[in-house]
Image (cartoon, rainbow, N blue to C red; front, side):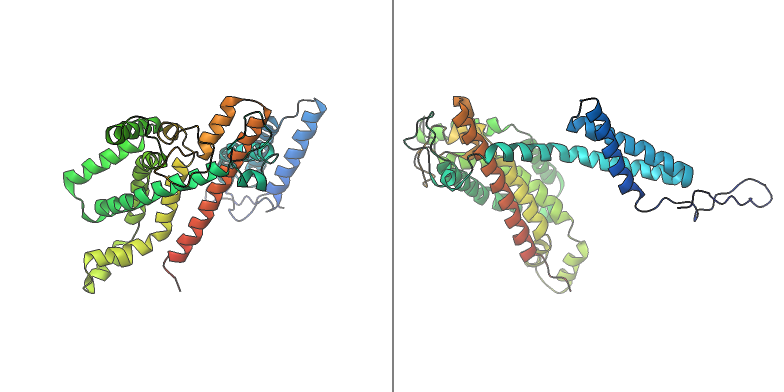
Amino acid sequence: MSLTTAQPTGPGTGAPRRDLRSGSLPRYFPAALLASSAAVVAGVLLAFSSFGFILWGVLTALAYTVIVVTASARVEGGRKAKDRLVTALVYVCFALAMLPLVSVLSTVTANGLARFDGYFLSVSMNGVLPSMDAGGAYHAVVGTLAITGMATLISVPIGIMTAVYLVEYARGRMKRTIMFFVDVMTGIPSIVAGLFVVALWIILFGPGATNGAAGAISLAVLMIPVVVRSSEEMLRLVPQDLREASYALGVPKWRTITKVVLPTSAAGLTTGIMLAIARVIGETAPLILTAGSSAVSINWNLFDGQMMSLPVFIYSQVRMGGAVNYERAWAAALTLILVVMLLFFLARMIGRLFAPKSR
């Protein structure tokens, strides 16, 4: 490491001029400084018996930022010091964004592993009293997959076709009107979607007609605007040159959309669909109103009787209270997270399978 910087004299002025090629910190310096800062801060906090992970992380980031910027200013100059300051702030913001996610995952995993096993995933709560150390969430897993699957089948075709219409066909006032209502629907509370479906179901089938299909429709109301907005952005990213090349070959517009536009944006469309599923798979309020909250047995029929889901199962177990019910709630929360992770993994595989092949 060069600790001195060449100071040649400017032509005719006698003022010092910094050589941009001289004076630089070693490449391993940031990593070594971060490890040293973490160790020193941990030692100081332990010496004062006030160690906490949050305080330790904040003080480590502060010490690292101050030292690396000071050292860079003395060795590399002001421009490089500013660059290192911004880089440190970016990494700190990234760590702050990841902190809630890591905290949630670690907490749910630590509390949910106590009951999460094959028995919990293979039995229902049929015939199990709240105080009994038995039962599982199989019926809730079935309900979650069935309700979310039906909601996906309803919302994805509608959302993608609406996005295609907005990008490829709509113009003027009609386009602005549709986009306005899509934006409004994106922000509606989930309980409003549940109340809307409850009112619709009362008109069609009479009061008290709760089932899984009603829950799926309420989730579809929440999914459609998310699918529309994400799909619209992905379709806009397809280069216009690809469309024009297809038109130049005499390919009609509908075939250009199905053979060029949609396959090109397949990966992005899949990601948008998964974001929409993740948006609704954990919803509780609309499912309590539409699918019911007292089902304890396995129900595969979306149109017959109440159907339990994992979010509602978690809510019902916490509401009843007691150590056993809390353990079931944590295990169900862990199951829900694993289901979402599995769906995202499958979506990535599907997006990669249908994405255009590059040579």
